[in-house]
Amino acid sequence: MLSGKSQKLLSKVLSKKSEITHILISFYNIIILHLSYYCNSEGVNMLAIGLMKHGGPEVLELIEVPEVKAEADEILVQVFCAAINPTDILARNGGIAERQKPYNPPYVPGMDISGKVVEIGENVKTPLKVGDSVMAMVIPNGQHGAYREQIALKSGAVVPIPQGVSFEEACTLPMNGLTAKLSLELLNLNSGDKLAVTGSAGAYGGYMIQIAKTLGLYVIADTSEKDQNLIKSLGADLLLPRGEEFIKHILERFPEGVDGLADGALLNEKAVAAVKSGGSFTAVRGYQGTGERDINFTQTWVRTQDCMYEKLDDLRKLVNANKVSLRLADTFSPSQVSEAHKRLQGGGVRGRLVIKFH
Image (cartoon, rainbow, N blue to C red):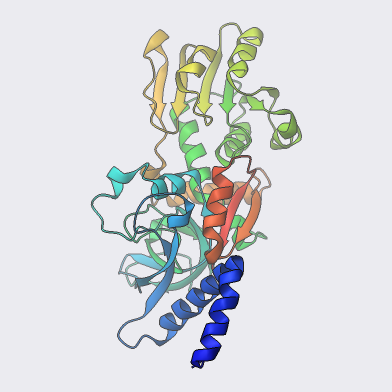
């Protein structure tokens, strides 16, 4: 214990150095939480990142959650990395508060993990073994989110990571990859059809382009000047200026419109004119469409893709075949998660920001 005099001196120094204070407090919290993980005799607690109330990035904090075990049909994963997605911002700021109502706080966000198998339930039939490197999509509810050190998932949600990729890279694939795969299923296009993609520089848009090309589609992608090289590298056939101008440029080149449009940029009704009569339009945030010109409007809800083992494993195979690329923007420690959310919310991030637990 510090003497009273030493404590006063330390307080005086820290009061003048708020940034140092923040770092020391974060470091202290991590030590305490990890000690509790290993030393709690009444039941082990796990390190997680959660929120007690909705708000800005500052509401995210290091918390303790109870240890979980694998049920008979589950696989327990030690989480090495968790990707940060725009849906996590909605979980944090109250954008999906209705969905969280059945659960008491703290709420643990996050939909993407990578890590290692710790335990396999007795009824699980899987080629996976304890110690295998895996990835999964998580459907958050209450404290069951990706931002935690361990998580138990249904066996159908957990697949091996692609060959030769890091845990940081692997966790960027599941949710956005499955979203893109579902969008393409809903659009129901044929080889040679024209697909327009908005939000092409984002994770969802990038996967849309690359997976669409494996299906033989002609892809028209929106881009800014600075993203042109990136979008070209993803394999788009035609690049056009992004924003509302994108629709105008599509119609200049294809007066009847395109066969399908995936709206990752949330242009909604502003993008409908680019789709030909009888074509398809899919939205990622629930836009219902206008019902005009026999266009098939669908909503891409990735939550419906939970435990789709074969679909996620197909994505793994596409990475192994170098047909889908994983884009990692930056990594953060658990104590830096507020900073990471600020950066994502500020826009312009290309690739995924990732939390490293191990």
